[in-house]
Every structure is written in C-alpha cells, then in structure tokens.
Length: 235
Image (cartoon, rainbow, N blue to C red):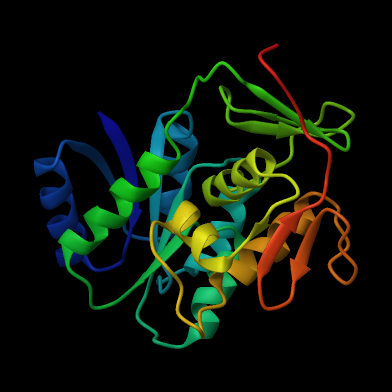
C-alpha cells in the first residue's frame, strides 16, 4: 500500500483527506504543523511514496519544509496553496515540488494528481538501464543520477522524468506541449512558467550554464533540445 504524508493545520481538511485516500487504498500519515511533519518524515522516510505540503502552517511554511525534504529525499511533493498568485507556485517548483494545487480543490482532483505523479515515478526495469552523458549516469532501475565522481545528483520525480525523456531523445527538438505532457500529464497554457522553472532547475543540477547552456538548449519558438551524446547500456 502506498504511504502518503500530509501536513495541514486544518483538522477537518486533514481528516477528510485521510478518509478519502484510505478509501482509495492509500495509507495516510497526518501532521498538523512543521515540527510534527519533520518527525513523521524522519520516522517514515524510506517508506513514503508521496508528500503533500500545505503552504500556510502555524510554525513554519510549506516552502521551508519542501526545501528540507529535498536536502535528503527525492520523494514526490505536491504543494497546496490558498493563493492564486503565480509566485507561490513558481517558488514551490523552484524549491523542488513536483506539482501544486490551488485551494479550494476537490479530493477527487487531488487524487488524480497523486495517481499521475505515482504513475510517472513508478520504477521501470527495461533492458536499457543506464543512460550516460558528459560524465553523468542515469539509472532507470534505481531511479537515480550520479555525476562523474559517483556522487548522487538530487532530483525531484519530475526532474528525473524530464531528464529521462531528454536522454531518450538526444538531438531532437522537443516542444513544450510534449515535455509538459510527459512530466505533468497535461499541457501548459501560454502563461504557465512551470516547465521553464523545471528546465532551469534541471540545468542547475547538471551544472549547465543557465545563461549559455550547452546541454539543454532553448530553441526559440520551438522548444528545447538535449545536446549531448548519450550511450545506453544494460550494465
């Protein structure tokens, strides 16, 4: 059973989500503030399938917690925000969140987002396991990326999915709609900057110069291209 950790300071909301998700075969752990969340995260870190963070909390905020989670874990994160301001969403994505949902929302919509993220982050075991490029190694089975020194590169689930798609299509111009569908399961509107934030974050993780990127290049008016020689192997 997939285990989900939720932090929200509203008891009614917490209990509603717990009841709804348990009916859909998820195990749910609840926290009411940042302190209890971090305690539960530490206790269950290797068992969690997904984390849901409310932005507004009594003792801290979801952005701080998101940053702390990302310092040691790639577990998928969905952020809940009461603000319709794009800034909140962009900040969350920059800190490593995988998705966001604005309040008010329906439990059904949240469940759909959860299923989409977990489906995309499911472990794959194809014949081709390793994708190697400019010193980096992407391991599909372990869902991890290491640098030339063998050190892990911390990526969110969406970052990993995006990099995987790039390495599977080196040298091809990939338009925004394809990349958004691949990572989020939906297209992006003309004002949606989520993909741009994700690309910038991935460049940073791969030490790709944001001003003059050599690895993930922007093709103005067309999309992005992964400009690296990629070798693929099963061992």
